[in-house]
Image 1 (cartoon, rainbow, N blue to C red):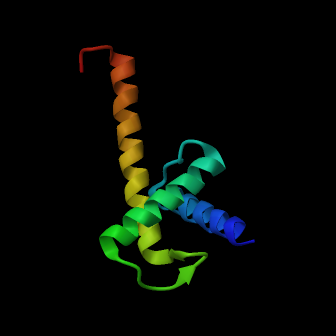
Image 2 (cartoon, rainbow, N blue to C red):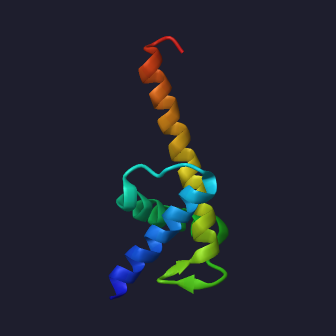
Length: 90
């Protein structure tokens, strides 16, 4: 149950980050889980672990970290998409 709970909470954090930024996390539910995990790691690295902890995640720093991650990833993907569409002349 422990690992499943962690995956569910990670997925919810990633999903919330996508929802709050208005951007879809690539990779569906798996992408959400990965974004939640990396985002929570990033958030606790920057902000520390404070606030309520659910499923091993400090929820508030985790969500903030995931939002930052989603914004960075969508920015990079958009830049890559523009490069692909415009050839070598940007």
